[in-house]
Image (cartoon, rainbow, N blue to C red):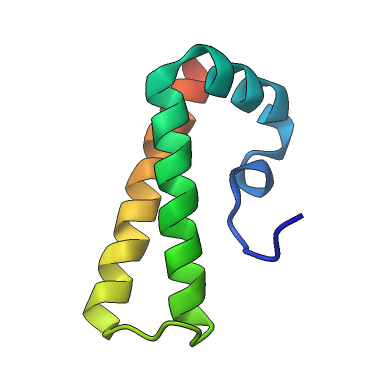
Amino acid sequence: MSNTPHELHEEFPAEADKIHELKVSNAHFARLAEEYHAVNRDVHRAETGVEPVADMVETEMRKKRAHLKDEIARMLAAV
């Protein structure tokens, strides 16, 4: 299990089955989920000082993560 906060299973705990099913059956959703995880890890590494970045860069990463999360939430709601 990851120590990185904001993982999809934590953001959508009641949707674990839907997330798994969409990852397997929908290539677009799978790509969004992978991109979300990559950005989320980058944000976490920046927040914890493992890989420091400029404040503006961190803000943009957070915005991208939020956008991806919103798109994922829309897809989960449509199922």
